Image (cartoon, rainbow, N blue to C red; front, side, top):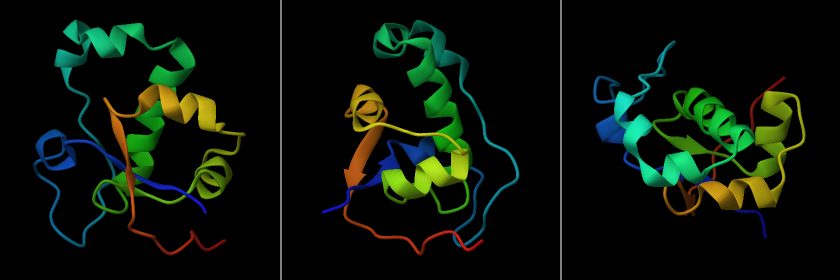
Length: 102
């Protein structure tokens, strides 16, 4: 069974995004600099979190499975690196999104 994901606190992080509307930009909050969980992440996980927010901006904070994420980011995303982001930044979701059409 594939896991689907969502960005934690999406409505707080991206407060200006309207329902059913993707946005061409995201906010990155400076409070991350003082977040202990953020500072414990390795650089690859930090970069992935920002990239996941970019993808999630298309679907109100929701993401498809790792295969779709890997395709969209054009690199292999492992379960291990996703697990670094769970539960502090990303949660497993039971919402399946339509796969990105090529």
